Image (cartoon, one colour):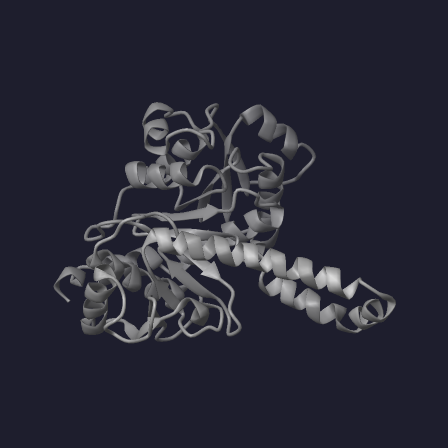
Length: 333
């Protein structure tokens, strides 16, 4: 498998990106990573590393900055690293693209250069989130601020396939994020989407779930529009940081607390690992005719390694063909 990696994307590019790619091919030597970006800078970082045929470099001098308009920049900067990555997938020189750069540019390049799966109105970000019962996936986590009911149905189908194929969850539980569990609750979008999800034959729809149910693991796939999904994602991220900050303050406050902290230190480390975003690496952009993984802008080498792993698993488990095979009747259900 060949994975196109945006070597210039992210807060710590290209150093951490190249390091993450190196770690990935060391762990999975049967695969190949194409590092796309400033060839001189990337090649210098590879000096002294015996990567054989596992890493290669494709020169792309352009970079789409965080403040640029994504779609306009993708059309204008054809030599930008993320655009060249998407073109490698479009021309079948790679089977997946991974980027920690401008999220909008990653979405726009995947949509404009690789294209949508037939029958998918709007691709969606499926963001993994830790819960007390294991990871769930939020679809959509920010690609579509405004949605129609059929979009939420398609998000549910794609999220269900991803959880089943990549996360190994049989019959994933689909929950519609709402302000109450009753089927009569919610705005017009939620009410109409509930009816479509309830009638859909290919998903395990469990009904409405509330925000407090997400982290308790009530659903394996949380369906919502991208505006709500992104707010939930950022709130959970902030809550996790705040909670660990409070714990650290309290357990180091006095001698008795510090002594107690030593007893629970290993447990706290395990909890921190379970909620660490770098463990997941990135979020798939579902609905694209190729594997596209969008990583956090602050991704370190561990996150990049795991993002490449996520791309490998999505391709190996044939997520895209599974979506193509199951989406054809979505509008009719």
